[in-house]
Amino acid sequence: MTTPFLDILLAESRARVEVDRAARGTAELRAAVADLDAPAGFARALSGEDVAVIAEVKRASPSKGDLAPGLDAGAQAAAYRNGGVAAISVLTEPARFKGSLADLETVAALGTPALRKDFTVDVHQVLQARLAGAAAVLLIVAALPDDELATLAQAARDCHLDCLVEVHDEEELARALAIEPAVVGVNARDLRTFHVDRDAFARIRPGIPDDIVAVAESGIRGPDDVRRAAHQGADAVLVGESLVTADDPRAAAAALVAAGRRGDTARDRRW
Image (cartoon, rainbow, N blue to C red; front, side, top):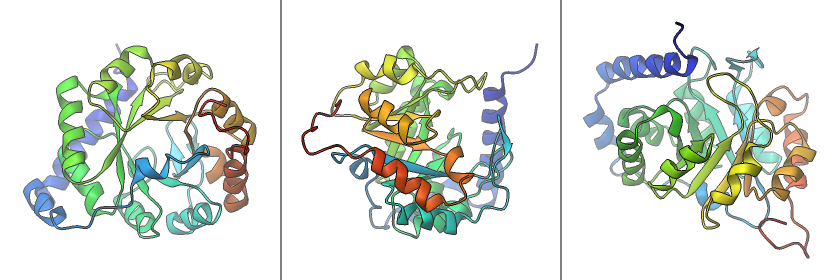
């Protein structure tokens, strides 16, 4: 029997943590972040009246391979910022997505709230994100038992980070709500099969309380998909592949932002 791919990614993440911890201990990281000013609020940036766009910096993915192998994280993020996005997601996983903490640090320095997107399995990674300037970390419910999910969420709160808590179905949503998240993302892509269920967000959205930011993830390829997500009740969308492969990422980001603007007479969160 083959090992599920998500389990492989998690095992690789744990191995990276041990290497990183040997170089710089968790206690040292905790001391280093203790006196840092609070970062720009990730959840707050997504909480406006319009559908916020979280633009992603990534060079590759397990399902598609290389997307933008020569991507300059700082230049890409600056293009997104100039396009008006609310936040920027940075892949820091090195083997499958070809990212790094250096990318995160570069992007966070621009001032737009940055999300560390990785397979977070240890408090050490939360502290690394904070030290690199992130405003939030990704917690994948499918990857974590309840006790670890709660521990990581508390560690993020302790160092003034928000969490994007990612779910794939109603059972995972129930587990996510138990840690009282400010932001819940519905990932339409199954991390075990890579299949994209384009109806996932619409199905799960009614279970997300209105005081929690609801993010539609995966399958957002252009303005029409942003409008569709908006009509399904999205407060924000996370977009990666279509932006990193765009000839003009600033213009592509701006088009998504424009598609998410709610009209003056359309003030309801769910349109």
